[in-house]
Length: 165
Image (cartoon, rainbow, N blue to C red; front, side):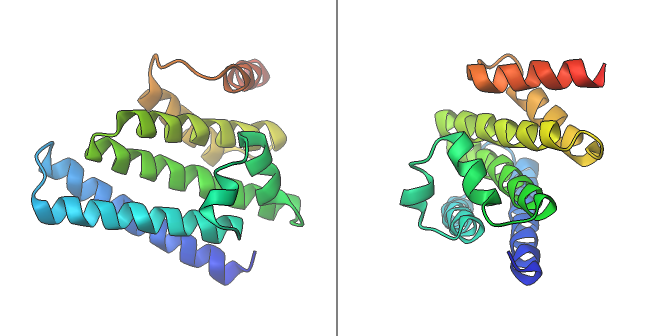
């Protein structure tokens, strides 16, 4: 993936993060213009995912989590593949917040679980240099709280815990 495209994705994710922060300050009751902006931003998030994957949403959304990881890393150096995966995890984290504001808790939970799975995959694949990845993992764990995790994600979390202790 070209650095210019990666920079574009990260700038757009930062913009989504600013909207999420603004919505948090407003609280639970959103004005109509906020709901409109929220829905438009969800469409932007989907567009950014398509850009990151280089394929239409219908195609990458039909893939399993591991197939999505493989698609993001295909034909890339290890560092670039990890960067694309972390961009995806960060975008999923922000998208989950948007879903939560919209009241779609099931979609928010799914996005958070997938973000955690992706972040754990990167953390386990590059254990020597992972402070930012570990921060993302811990943040997602805190937000997920006691939520049930899919068995592969739970196993990776257990494995990561044993590697850092």
